[in-house]
Length: 243
Image (cartoon, rainbow, N blue to C red):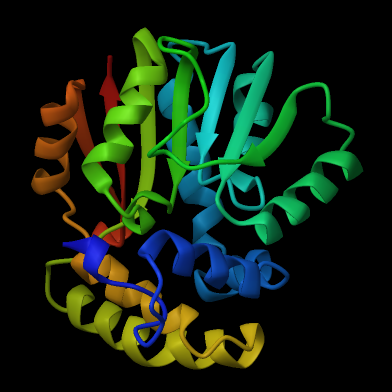
């Protein structure tokens, strides 16, 4: 399971602690590397995922594993909500997000705070929608994280999760594996100065229970109408569910 995959195998720390350390280390180069290593496709994926919420017109949104805030900014542009709260376990990433919020003068809509999905500091049935982009594979306890997001979602509310997946068709599978295991770690190490972060990324994707396995987990914690939408030959996927 993905909770056994950690960024720094030699450290005697929990996965949650190691993930926070990793994102603190790469926070300054995270946005650049995201766009560079995905050739900008990650921007298209985010827009596509956010559009899954247009039909319910959410007013209050929770963005879990908000990082530097890119998913939330897309939500603001597309959905025009009244309020978005972003939570993340990395203070380094949140510092970047706060600067971007201030630069864009969006303090009245978007705020961020420390937190993670296994212990959300919000009341039950609070949010119209919940979003997560490239975060669930980093959860220490995936089922617990999904269950707590379900708890704070309003009845009838919708969750949208964007996450890397594993292509299965030849030759995309082989090309993707080469890129993930050879190209991505090399450039990630050069630009981020973290020797482990971009080796951990493909390892965490490989260990993540994607597709039908993840849908079953969503169903187990209570989500209804769970769905899996594959993007770009299965390199990523959008998962949706309703409370």
